[in-house]
Image 1 (cartoon, rainbow, N blue to C red):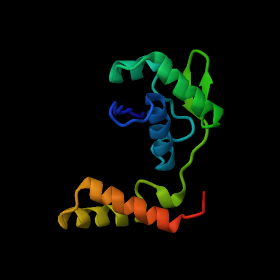
Image 2 (image 1 turned 135 degrees about the horizontal axis):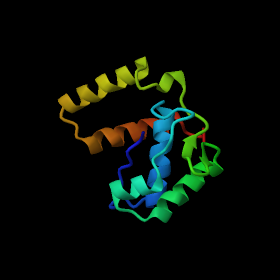
Image 3 (image 1 turned 30 degrees about the horizontal axis):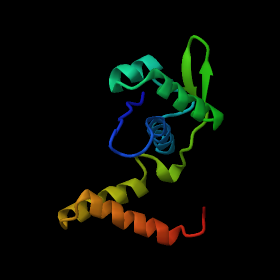
Image 4 (image 1 turned 90 degrees about the vertical axis):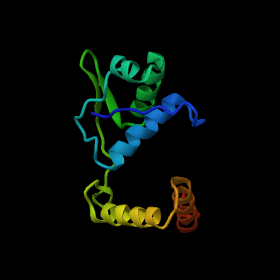
Length: 129
């Protein structure tokens, strides 16, 4: 089960945060086909957001073919985005964890690491979109 974290100061629409967090969990293999997403009522209780916001996010995920609603049963993951290279227990993740730890020891704060990673991604994936 996924626990959604809503950042009201992020500038990103709440429903989009739910969509993004779900895709993130799908990419890391934390959610797998057949897993049930929390009900709108459960998300509302945990985050104090409008139920229509949750439903909008779930509709978007369904439109993208990632989840399917089953009447009276809930919303279930229908497709994974995970690749072996992105597994939460994979060697690339281990390398990244070690790199982040070294960056932190070197005195970089989260924003520094994010800026460095974003710049590196921009350089290496230029034109791939």
